[in-house]
Image (cartoon, rainbow, N blue to C red; front, side, top):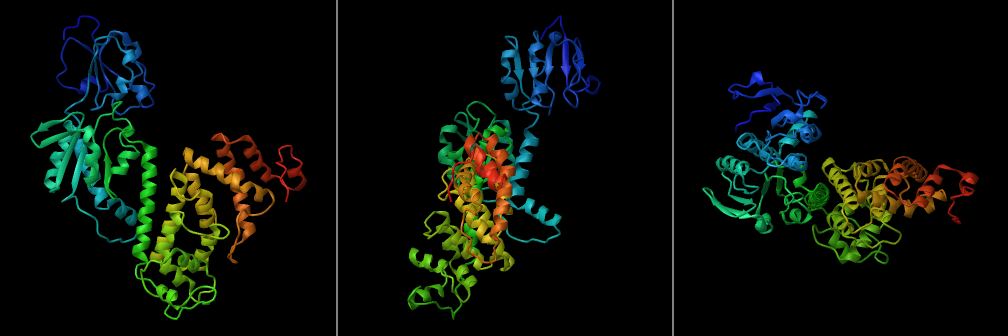
Length: 497
């Protein structure tokens, strides 16, 4: 390249630290500074070659582009150039944009393999257990004999496969923008991705971020992955639809929790001497089913079993039916007389937090997984406010469930909050708890006070921020008033009790 004037080259590394720079240019150091406020080293209009600062915020990297009216080459130090292509309109015609091909292949491929091995072999769990001072054994799958799908098969994708081969994987499938054949085999086009996903045990993303790949990992992509498959992303973050991923993770969490209940309570039965009233509950044949492990009960028998309040050992009976009962709850097939607080009462009567740790943890994880799923899954079978009531009655406290709600800040969770507030405000404004408390150890006044305090605090702010109806916001505000101040307020809804 022959350039007379100007001849400034902007480098993000001090020129004196770089050997062999060509003569005939003026090398100026600029990396944006620690906070992005480093003064320009010269007039951007005199810059002919701009080497983009590495690992800086995008606003810093692209800041001088609009003033670089005579720049001829823009060199990134990253494999991807999406942050620069978004600002092409700022550059003069004819500029050459170069990426850092050949620089990051080894380190990125090494990172992909590290993440894959760590996730498969349970390294994060072991580290957390070590921090708690616990010794936790267990079996974790190997990478060997796994089917791996590499999505994005450029130089980095090929380097990832080079590092997978020594680990004796069963197969590596390759996907890129267009079909081609390499020394290692066929590279499939993106159009064949849906057919390849169901067979993959590990999916590694190494594709560049383009308009085609933005949001590539969406709800449909995730649904096609097999249960338990591992997704590793060493591409740009926006390649994955974050909301779709979170929803899928919560659904997977619930599936895992239900499976854990089946494993934990496998083989459980009611006490051999357990009995109940034949005229009100059922006959000897039905009772014998509760003393036989893992036999599925008819829906009506299941309902009568969890609703009955006069078992000699209610905990043993609940443990016997719990895997089937939990599945019935999640799928919305549980019949009840008053509401799901009845099912919560059944949990409470069994005093499940006092069960052996493995059993109590399995129940706790199921309740949390189902509750969060009801907040985040648009296809949830049971309304979130009903699941909340069950969890509250099952545990006798609101704290853990409200904490989960605060962590789920998406649009759907906000909508679930507005729906619950609509359902609850009538009883709350009448100084009642909006569900029936059936277990005598639960303090109804304390539960109502905790719910009102949360609605007036966190929930009120969130309802306002998410654009909930103004009249609903006023009805929640009225919970902070008492007696005459409440019903003489101009926004009193006219409820009669």
